[in-house]
Length: 420
Image 1 (cartoon, one colour):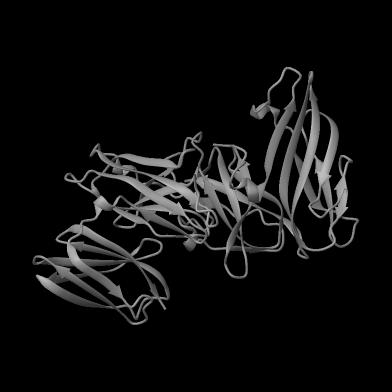
Image 2 (spheres, one colour):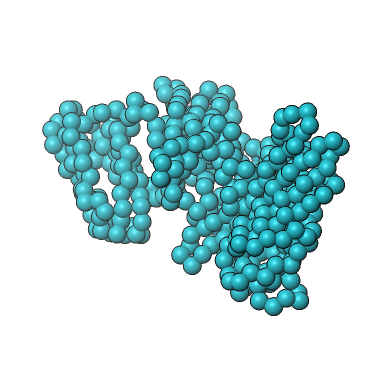
């Protein structure tokens, strides 16, 4: 599970690219040839925005080239650089390393935030029950004044369970811990946020201005009772959508939660390098499939697994700029109405639903919030012909909601509404 982020998070957290000048020909891509490393801290002598950069590269380095992303450069090993103004800079260190007869050129870049605030350390111990975990990955997300969240740093930790973010600027953050597949706690404990919460929307923020290393996290237990060989099966694909080009690309290592009808997380999976995830041998029941992407509201998908319908296949989960939405093959939903509409949308006090049915039956309306929690359930009779229903939403908080509609116990429609 431990890896260098090269495609997505690397853009925020740091990346490395290795190019080898090999007399025998060919590029070297083996991870053992990743050499460039550096740390930074506020310089104690320089006033203003002075930063001490310290080279920690591996191997026999024969040259250094620093790009400070402000039009200036340096070639010494451990430069002190004074930035002219606050900002977020992509600082890159390029080293040339001699490895036998090969000269390897490696570039490592990090986001360096220059502010008037002080830099301090943030950390804590991650526990599974009474004992520290054996290994894990902690992610630090910065929360701005509008409660938007951006990836800030990553901490890989091992035996002892202590995570550590070095030289983070003062401000508000949330912390999430993932469990790598190499851990003995995989599938037994859930990925967990500081505050012992499962979803980012419920996680408390950490507001710190001095070094704080007591932000411990207790991993939540997964419910392992789902494995009873009922042959229930759910699979799908998760991907990022480029809002400018419309192109899609696979989202790797995204946490997919499987939450039962009582709001208990039964298990989870990480999407693979192709964005694929699947759950095997799960109990029959109603589940919501929830992709947990920190800082983005998630519209979950509901899967009703039963003896007559043991599989839900080909779920598409799309990570958009501000939200995560889930789609499923339209064959999962039956066109049971000749006419259907929900209005007004957005709504304030009342939502009206109109539909035309071809037979008498029972309409079941379920309203869920964006965390996938069931808010209310309404059942009404539907008659042959036109039917109209009014739903009181005056007591709901402002925001987005999701309405599931079933007719005679069969899923018929999913609709997103906005309450003003």
